[in-house]
Image (cartoon, rainbow, N blue to C red):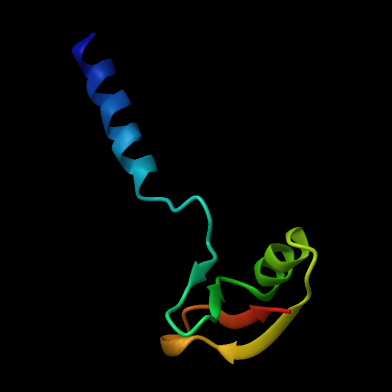
Length: 67
């Protein structure tokens, strides 16, 4: 029974490192998403369109704004 509790705890901790939303706001008002599709979906949920600004630094996704 103890191994089951340890396994459950390990899975709980592993799941905590996954962000619920991959869209990250940046200081200058731009947003960063993992993919162009994710950026478009994020803006579409708000009733806006995504304006792509290019690749994020170190090519860690894309920069965009909702307009």
